[in-house]
Length: 381
Ligand code: GLA
Image (cartoon, rainbow, N blue to C red; front, side, top):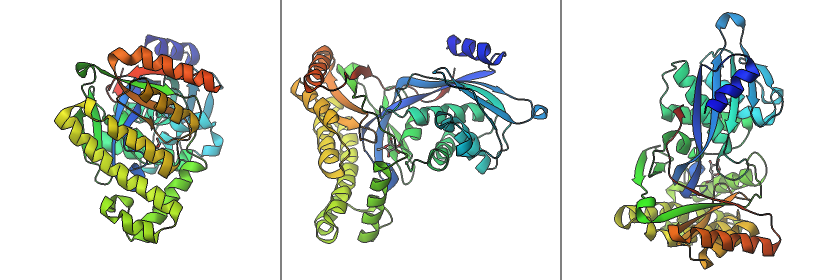
């Protein structure tokens, strides 16, 4: 990352004191279960948000300057008393972490920050959480705040929920901060217990392809919020604290008592939680080649019951399967973004070519297709 340090020096006139990086993620399975206090199984990818950081001496005030290698103006604000409307939307992922730390009682100094991210924006790969986590880890380590990574997850979620304004759960931030190479992160979003589950893709001759449909999405508006509300209503009407508390055995009763649309949302969450547990069990007993059916069932559930797929994602999944994938599903919040396909490594070219051809024939934008391996979580560079 010398380029980040160089760009920082060129912009601010001083070298950064430290650089940090935090990854985006794919979610192998367990979608929209996080804010229902259920289970998720993501892994970190090798696309990261990097930050260069230089802390301002206390006596020179608390000015915060935020810039991005993607261009745009340098955003300037006071590190205390931050308000979202004072900060350009892209810089809120940085400023939001300062704000959230302030809420937790830390009076942070001013700083210069340069952001350099390779996580595509709007692709469902957690570009926003990657930025938040790089900033949170950077402040924690560089200023010696003594927070655990689990505490940083909650600070980043607070920034996302209250400062950015997206009512998301802890999936993305947990994946970015807690992942380890060659593992998926099995997380119970109620107890926040996390376990590393072996995901030996290369050793099994497998690959995970990401198919970014380039249909962009954002979670601070519309659809995502409505789903959160539908799930909350489902839980209330079933008399539980969260849909996590509803097992598959209660689905018949739920169908009879809930409005049809609420029932379908509930059904997705309840069955998806079970699929995460089943996936972990299969990974541990038989390895990654065994989970294809669960990935596909998860996609069908998101398409038919949760209503968050789109024609491009369905085409990516269907074409991958027809070209020999072991399993495929959309990943992330939905309404666009990316699908993943679990494939034998020798099928990578064939599956990619088939998907590109199908998109061209349908007249859709050319998708971005690349393979990902489970990589490390946030770190100092
Ligand atoms: C987005 C949110 C996560 C999670 C997923 C869906 O990525 O940020 O908290 O809800 O959607 O699983």
